Amino acid sequence: MLDEAQALTKDSDYFRSETYPAHSRPILRPIVLSWGEYCPSLIISGTGISMREVETVTVSTVAKQGLRPVTVTEVGGFDDEDGRRAYLKQYFPPGLLDTSEGKEIASRVGYWLRGRFVFNAAV
Image (cartoon, rainbow, N blue to C red; front, side, top):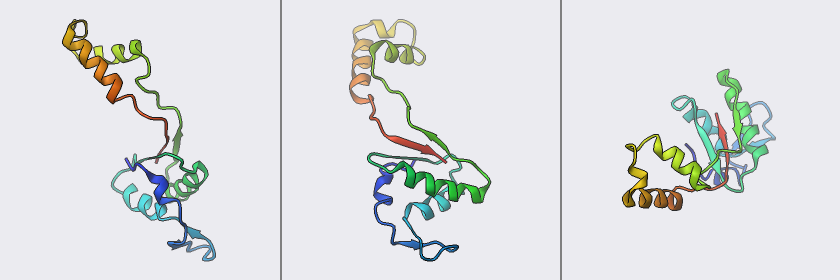
């Protein structure tokens, strides 16, 4: 996962296009190109990130690898208690969430793991 990718799209004077030398590209493109070889399911995430910029970078990058990028903008979260408990029940022993310790764990999961809304792109 490449988080806070918005920092890598701000300035585009780092690299020039080989095909169109007058066009500059952000540093995100060579990073995605090099990491894509080792992380074929690279997730690009950030806040205030330009979806157009990321899609331009990822489409040109993955096309060279014969892949198609997937854009995901709704990834869910632990926003409601019922959904959180249903998720946790899959991983905890039966009845644990009904104990005082289990309720405390569920409460902390809601507080610490709520998540944040960001744009994510899986390459």
